[in-house]
Every structure is written in structure tokens, then in C-alpha cells.
Image (cartoon, rainbow, N blue to C red):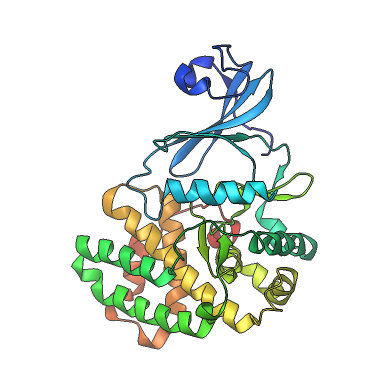
Length: 327
């Protein structure tokens, strides 16, 4: 991981029961230091320094209520990727999926700008090619449209007025999924959340934070990149070639269709989160941006309740992703 930006905190932040699983603290020995280094929307992570080295201890929060999470699946896929040198090694995984400890990778996290540079995109594609070659564990194949429908049911169940818009988007997504040709490609491990905070360059490119990893069409990871960083679309052919997917028959047109599907998933994921919790303005901004992009694909066919007034209701400011936020 990149150097932590948070200040050092007291050793009492992590309980002794969990600390004993960190190498160097097995016998009750205190760590040299702990630092809160952030985390995603569903966890907190700490950098723990001991006489044995540096490790990341992640505390999983809200896992049971967050759409798309399956900690057992995450562990299986992260472990497989780590064994192939694509992810940090897993040191300890709590049987109850409350805690995950991994090696600390001393490297440089990417920024949105990396996704505009050909040399970095080529490196990304080459690492995805390696990931495709990893034999996936016994995990059911991910169907994006099944997940989209599950999120849609959550949304409509809480607000039936959204049914028309959601069904319109699902129909478009199903057509895009067919045109993408996903069923024709052999499944592989996919990370499914390749924003810049999850890509790190050390001695090579690594992927971290595997919460949303799946076994699916390998083109899905490139669709994720295009959704998060639209400016990377100019380099679609480069990514397809570097990842080996061009050799498997994937085309820029197929990638564009699957990007539409991934954008739909992104919108529905953020919208479904609002069903059960209050979300920050940054989430609303991403939700709004994804919805605008989806509606722009078929502007003459929008249901009445997709007006600008509706979009303004979910507008916000800021986002971790520079392209989506327009930074």
C-alpha cells in the first residue's frame, strides 16, 4: 500500500484478541505502532508495525447490509490472486469475516491521471492478463444482470414510483449484455472495483481490496475501468490487446456495451444503498453521474420521471473518482 496519510494513534485501537493474529504480536507483544489508514465504505484499515514487519489489519463493518458483499467469496478470490502475485498475501482471516490481515505492500497508489496514460494502461492490461490465467476457485459465475435485478427489487420495494425508470434501465441493460457477448467468453477471476485507490505500483502492479471480486467475464474489469474513468475509453484497443482479450475476440464495441452494463450496476448499487441508510453527498454525486450517462444512451425513450428535476434530487458534490466527479 501507499504510505499512510493518517497520524499514528494509540495501541488501544485494535483489541488484543485481534492483534495476536498479527505476526510479531502472537505472544501478547505490543506492536510498535498502529495507524488508521482509511478504508472503503464498508471497512476500516490499520497499518500495524511489529518486529516482524508491516501488516494491514482491516475491520469489516456493515458487511451484512452492503449490496454485493460476500466475505467468503472475497477471501477465496483474494487468496488465489495473492498466490499468483497479484494481491497482498493473506496472513489471517477471521472465521466470522470480521477481520482480515494481509501483508503491507510498500508502493504507490494510482491516481485518476494514471488511467489516461498509455504506459500505465498497458501495465494494467498485462496484469489483468495474468489474473485471467489464474485458475478460479469453485465460485458461481457472476451474472451482472441478476445482480442488477436484485438491486432493482430493493429499490422498487422501497419506492414503487421508481419502477418505470428502473424497468426501462434494466431492459436497456439486458440488451447491452447480449450485444457484449459475455456468455461466449470463459470466466475468470475479476476484481470488479478497479478505481485508483485499489491499484498500486510497487515492484509490479498489484490490486488491493477484493471485496467485490467475482468469477465472471474477464472483460468486466475493463468495463469497470471505462465506467470509472471515461477518458480511458480512448485507449480501449490498447487495453484489449494488453489484456489478451482482443485475441479472444473481444472488440471495442463489445467493451462499450459491457461498460453500459457496468454503469447500470454502479447506479443501482449506489441507489440501493440509499434504501437502508443515509449516504454522503459524494455517493449521491456518483449515483447522479451514472444515471445521467445511462439516460444519455437513449434520451428519446426516457420515462417521464427521469426529468432534470428528478436528477437534481440526487445531485451532490465530490467523489473519489476524478472522471465521475468531473474534477
